[in-house]
Image 1 (cartoon, protein in one colour):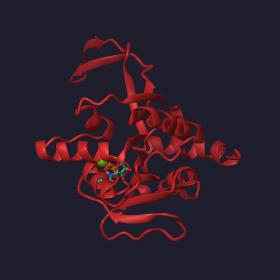
Image 2: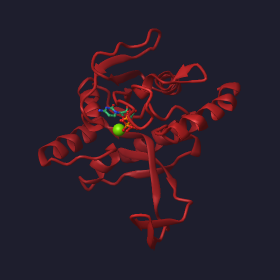
Image 3: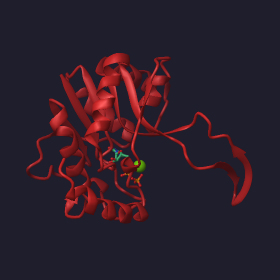
Length: 216
Ligand code: CTP
Ligand code: MG
């Protein structure tokens, strides 16, 4: 059995339009878009919502109350499922191609831990204030996206270890990698960008016109 776990309990501070999962792009919320992409490919969908927010009607999901951090929200989602494989996906990444999910599921069946990621294409540089302080070779570097998939027991162990050691991370693959477990990198997709700033929301609005017109 497979479950999709969607952390959607953030406050959307950088976007500045209230809790981000409820922000709409072309009339459909970021959360509803993520749910629509995942629901056909898993047995159940669980969503972590901000405290005091109700589940929008019509979504085929179970809701839990999120925590103070993304990591805490994922831990609560994990505690609420018995599925043997879990996919963790940010509500803030509304354009999730089905082919990416299928490739991720194939990878997790082989390795027990896998994340979608994009090879870095831009030149990278370290800054000191606003000054160029040295280039960073981009060879072998990937930008990590979601979804990420794990055998549930493995992600559970990773969260327990992180909590016991006071470690925090912005994603789950990093917590699993800390255990010394190999994490497979599955090529992601530029459309999987995280809606973080007002500029990202403008991009999302433009992409939605094409995305929503395609049969999927
Ligand atoms: N998230 C969560 N619980 C939290 C914080 C974040 O479930 N306590 C979720 C967000 O809802 C989002 C994902 O984690 O789907 C990635 O987080 P981010 O992009 O940082 O969203 P926000 O925390 O809402 O945005 P900001 O950091 O700008 O406030
Ligand atoms: Mg955040």
